[in-house]
Figure 1 (cartoon, rainbow, N blue to C red):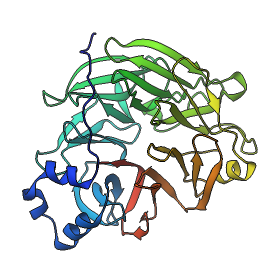
Figure 2 (figure 1 turned 60 degrees about the vertical axis):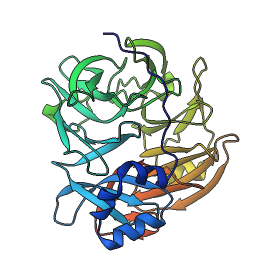
Figure 3 (figure 1 turned 180 degrees about the vertical axis):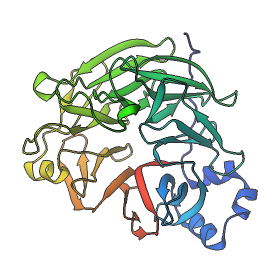
Figure 4 (figure 1 turned 90 degrees about the vertical axis):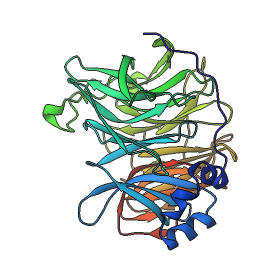
Length: 366
C-alpha cells in the first residue's frame, strides 16, 4: 500500500498557541481553579489515570501538575500521542487491549473509540503523520506472531485503511522521524498472545530490534538487532533529539544481577551506540526503563524506572548523568521548559500529588 508524501507543518510552541486553537468557549467550561492553573502554566500535558473508585480516564494538566480537565476512558490506557496540526490526541489501551480513544483536548469533538481488527490487539503506542491525517498504531498479529503497523484515516472517522510490517516481534513504542515519513519502531522482541494475557512466551529466544520504515510504502529502510549477548534486552521506547538522532530505552528480561546497558542512540545509517551509565545509575534503574523523553531545547535525555523508583537526567552530547533522583513508582516523563516533568503511579505529577494514579506515559500538548 502506498501513502502520500508528508510535508512538515508548524507545531505548537507554547500555551498561547494551544489557547488560541482551543478558543474561549472551551476555557469558559473550566472550573475557576483549573482556569487559573491554565493561565499560569508554560506547558500543557495529558496522561491516562486510574481514579480511587477504579474508573479510568485521561487528564489534561499544567506543568505544575494541576488537573485542568479530564474525560473518561473505557478501560486502562498506556501510551498517548498528539497531533498539534489536527488538534487530536489518542490514548491507546494497555497491551493486550483492543481500543484506542481519539479526542480533541479542548473538547471540540466527541471522542472516537476505535477497536483493533479481528486477530490483532494494540501494543499501547502510536503516532500521527506530520500532517495529522493518518494515525499509525503498533499492533500484534498474534496468530502469525508478527508485529504490524495499522494505518488509520483521520479524515474518515479513523477507519483502518491499511497496514505494513513492523519488521519484528512485539512492536511497542514508535515515533516519526524529522523528515516526516520515516517511522522509528521499537520491536521489543517478546512474543505474546491474548489467550495468555501479558505472559511473555519466548524469553529464551527473543529478538529485539529497532526498525526504520518508510511510511509511504511500508518499506524497511534499516533494522538494528540487539547483539547476541543482549538478546534479552527488550527495546521498548524511543524519542528523537533536535539533530534527528534516535534515542531508545530498554527493559532487560535476563538475570537480575546482570548489568546490561539500558539506553542508547543512533542516527540513520549508523550502528547503535549504548550509553555507558555509571553502575550506581544502572542499579537505580533496576534493569527497567519505563519511559524516555528528549528535551530538544537543552539537549537532555530523561529516563524513569518504576521498578527502581528513579528518575535520571542525562546530557545527550556527553552521556554524563546530570541528575539522579528517587521517585517511587516512577511512571511517565516529558520535556518541560528547562528540564523534564515526571509522574508516578502513586499520584505525583511534577511537584503536585493528586488522588489519581497516573499511568505509564505523558504527552506534551503545548
